[in-house]
Image (cartoon, rainbow, N blue to C red; front, side, top):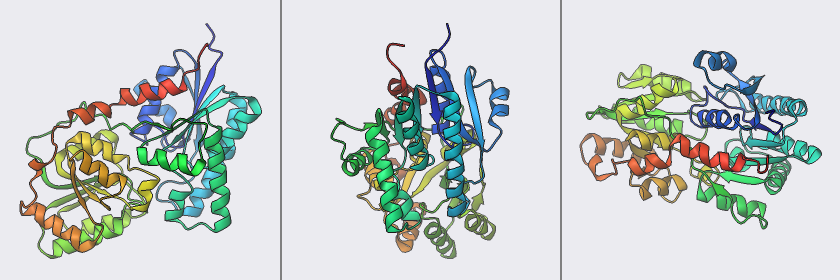
Length: 390
């Protein structure tokens, strides 16, 4: 039977480059394709069609890769221009595909969701809006916007939120923020779906872990990388012996590489594939989770889920009252340290000297692991993307 109902996923980052949500979205479209005509609009960094063919993934799904002109290490101006290019490309692709329902996230923020809303208004379609981050607030923390630009972007995003068929975000705090700023009187709630963790099915977890810290993720503007690098440098100058391994890329990758050249106990691995990142998180006793306090109102670090499932004790570098700090404390996953160089160095020494015993934390992660499975994430998204009476 011909699949007349069309669903389109719009997400700039996708599998295999985006290992967590990207993998979840790929599983989602693979399942939806049994009942619907499904297409994906994405930015292509890694020749996705070759990856799909080689791995036997994405059967029955139409992929529309749009050339990427920037990455997480690019400057703000280049990334903004790239977002405009992606936005225009998405609109013309939607005119070609003519979907009945669209999934769109905040990757990239504001502009693409707004153009999706316009398409849906014109063609009487519906869309699900998944706020992985809340913009322009999160953007404004990184790059100070002028007052009028900020107000315009805020109006655009609130308009997208109010006109969505469904609104999804990843934490209760973010849901409250969305409802407050968009005055969502017609919504009983914003749906909260936690991002999944990287799959650990094929990961070997040794009883004797490496004494030290792993960091897997974006070394970007919101991750307090300069503070972390300064603290590690001082820690080693004071005779510290713990090991540090960094995986990922971002604007501060050069600073991490320079630190690795200076100290033998620091590894800078750059971008690695998802399974290697999962293995790295499982290899080390501790995992670093630095984040700017203000941004936790508008975002939540995706690597936190994988850290939890990996069995790593988390060292969150942020305020205790932030959503990240409260999450770590609520689940007893590790230590929350104030973002200050001296405090951080002291914690490094306390861990090395055994003053902080990892056995006091929750090392049995079965319950949280079950909640962060890919199939749970996909099933919840599928509920919101299903079209009734098809």
